[in-house]
Length: 440
Image (cartoon, rainbow, N blue to C red):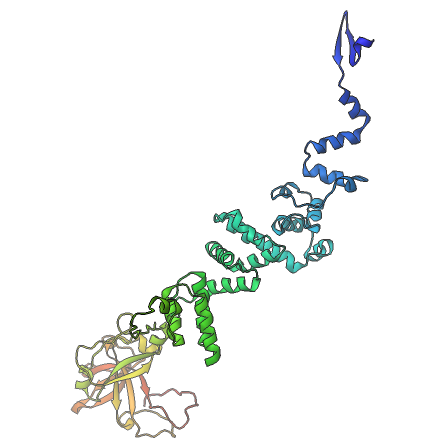
């Protein structure tokens, strides 16, 4: 019927009703290819587009090289699609680089991925690590506009890769410095990262207190350290290089004084004014090994009264500088190595014997029996006598003698436990190993 065009008549029992028929439905059923095209034109997903590009003739009709916005590529999860994105370098390096770990988890090796995509194993590692550094910068609040500085081919990945050795706060400081200086070279970024790391480690280095933690000062400190190991001409070049990077006033003053010239910034500020000679005192921080190498011990004469009067402080000294304080104005002191027996002694002193024959010692035949001898004695352990030790005792007439702990009796006055007997340097054979001295 003409009036029923576009209508279908359905009967249900004694009733009938009409349902309108959409012309589009007929088109869909008759032409599926148009239906697909209509869906794509209305805004298809990337998955539909990739599927369409695989249909015969579809790639030529619909695929065009483009760089999709970040985030779109993350919706693709199949290994085949990830491989195609990496192979075609779609998006920025950090867009397709995020798919490399997924391909590794899918069973690809660096070698097979190199063969499939053209990215070498070194480039794969560099891009993956750079993506992690970039994510760290985002987590620290770095804005997207600043991060665009690193969006050039894979050169940006090479720069961020060099910042991997730094902590998250240091990475942001270094990245901002690289952007500020427009450093497009990965070697320059590597120098910045190493300078920051080196400055953090060398907290006790001489001159470090003049430099701040700013990347420029860290680079200046690195060149300042290098200058100490170079000859005159190269040394001046290194100092001038350090002066180019230095940002703090104290660092520039130190570098200028090391060069023997006025800081250009201060020279301009003091132009037309009377200059006074600068006075600077260098502060040198002692290392722990430098204060632990020697100890100072009092030297007593070989008689009981002098031994008793000798000050009996510990060998370690007091305070950070290990200062030895004496209750009396003692006139004789001797430096000795910080050996364990010396440091472990309670009240160590030394006794100088002008003639070694005064003591009964078994010595090498090549030694001069009449040379001086220094006896190291601990006065603080006489309250507890040990049978295996040797003790210095006062004999009759003001003399001294050596007695074993097992031979001591109540009538003897014990002055101290003998720790060592020392001969002066320059003996018959200094290279020969020390031999143990036994008591007669």
